[in-house]
Length: 400
Image (cartoon, rainbow, N blue to C red; front, side, top):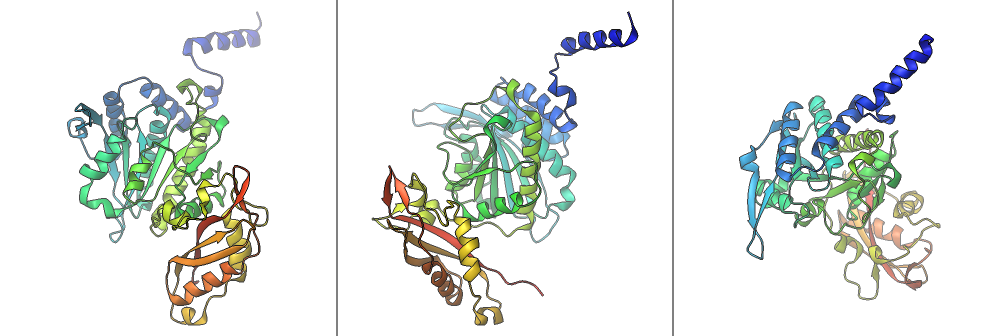
């Protein structure tokens, strides 16, 4: 038998013995580490998963904030049963003395979420490696009982973190990542600041970019932060509701791309001003009885045949916006939240300021929005409707 054929037969014999798929042979170190974590976390109970994540934090150089005993707690349900829950919490302190008491929380639910926890661990390792770049402190958490009233995140916010709640600037939730066939999605609960930050990251060279979804999933840990008026985003693969991928179906090369994007987003949160929390009820519906909130339209209003509100900002508002000279002279800047209605004929009316900065800026923002050309009206069940929506109009002075 000649040598090349013998070598080929030996290779074929080795592959089944290692139980290794063809794709995994070419994985990088990060993808291979996530594959190992998913394998270890799949099918284990919550306490075991929390212990694994806690040890993973420790080996990656993070300060673990709790022991297994400290992180196990019970919550009495309405039925009288005690719900036992396990969290795993670690942190990285920021270097900037003026900002290190501000926190960004990055979390992943434990239940049915081996891929999210695996990505959380690799993100923790990368942030630990680059901790000299972190101005603000980062807390990383694996939340227990997410499928039971979000008990883990509720306990973290209402008991463990307590009085420091106002110091949490933003939150990131990682859920069921790695299913490349379903795409990459970011749920922001219609927070304009978070949408703007995501678009800034997406505007740079990235291996993957998320679809931004304004609506909220019915159940997720990021809603616990939302309830505390903390801006939060949930990253996931596929639009919810969705079919959960089996661990063996995870695309780890895809997870590595998502990791890169989420890391870059986290680093932008380090440098950007704290995003503001504006409830979607306020942003999208200020109380008009005749208008349908933007979120509730089956077909959203379109400006210049585009359903993205940012097109209206970039192709109309910022083209014709005039920065008042008196505001420039006095260094006045900020974001004006403007509410308006797009009626059944597509005309903009009832423009008003929901959250102002200064009368000079407020007046100019209202003036430009009110002068808008006609939109294509929104629809509900095929019928044209008046739609109410709100947008930030930003006035920013450039440094000389």
